[in-house]
Structure formats: structure tokens, C-alpha cells
Length: 238
Image (tube, rainbow, N blue to C red; front, side, top):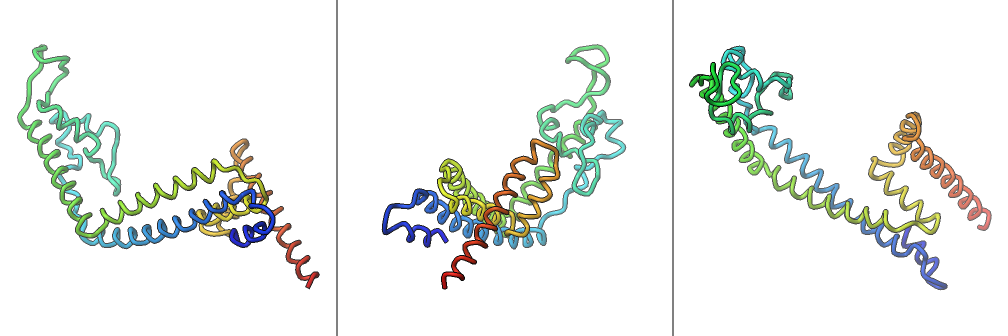
């Protein structure tokens, strides 16, 4: 579409949105690269799921942990993906506080302060189990190709976002350029129909959040009407 519009103006003067159309073409090419990389990443994630190590039981909360003064570890109610309380969110704290204490000490030497080797052993068990799991998962990510695929998606995303920023910084001067922007939005949201559903949903939200989507809705309806008129005029001319 952009190439046809440029050709239309080539005999007289450059199209006022020539640079923007060039960026739009680059974006579509970059999106193809990103989309392919994302598909490859999805396949790699499936391979990773098949060989991913099991989360060790040692990192999950035990009733005995309360007696060892490890209550603070799960005090925030952090849970694993399957809903179990675990200590993963406090691993670094356990790693950095080598002496676990019992009682209510304010600092070393305070009355009532004493350490418990069982508490320290449990803290070490949690840290060691988590570190071993993280290392095993990282090995699985590389073996499955997920790590490389993830990096590829990241690189493609950077390129895409750079072009998107340049497109944003190039104000459209013609209605054709506005159409090109809307085509980009439609593709990002999975196609025109899906994008229309998103717009319809968002315009039901409270103002002012709904205002931009209402503007997009109006543009889409006006442009569709304009395209229909062009088709009728061309058919009449034939």
C-alpha cells in the first residue's frame, strides 16, 4: 500500500509522508523477524518444559521453620506457582545473615540473644537447594535452546521498539499515513477484528482512559467509510 502511494506522488512531488512510509515498511519487516523469533521461542519453551528440573522441597515452608525462627521468611505470604508457601523471596536475606537468632535481639550481646545451629543449618539448606535448582534450570535453558531463543526475541524486540519510537516521533501529515499507523496497531493486536474488539472493550472504561480508544474507534469508522467511497468511485469510473 505504501509503495503505491509513493508512486502516486512520484511524478509531481515527494509524498509528504515518504519518510514515515519508509519507517512503516521497516517496521513490518522487523515485525516479521520478531514474530518468527517468538514462534521459535515458544517451541524452545516446550522443549524446556520437558527437561526442566523439579523445584526442590527444601525451599518450601515447613511447620518446623517457625520453631527455628524462620517465620520472617514466609511472612509476606509468598507462594510458588502451585500455591505453596516458599522461601524463595528471602533467599538473599538468608544468604546475607549467616547467624540465625532466637528471641528478640536488637544487636549482638543483648540479653536473651543466642544462636541456634539448627536454624543456621536450615537456612543453609534453603540457600543451597535454591542455588542448585537455579543452576540446573539455567543448564536446561541452554540445552533446550530456550536461552538463545529468548535472547533472539529480546534483540528483535529492541529493533522493533526503536522503529516504533521513530514512527511515533514522525507526525502523520496525510490520512494515508494515519491508515498506516492503524494497520500497525491492528497487526500488534492480532489483526483488524481483534483490534476492533479491544477498542470496543476499552471505550467502555471510565474517562479519561477511554478517550484515546474512542478517538481510534472514530478514525477506524471514518477511514473505512472513506475507503468504501473510493471503491464506489473507482467502480463508477470504470
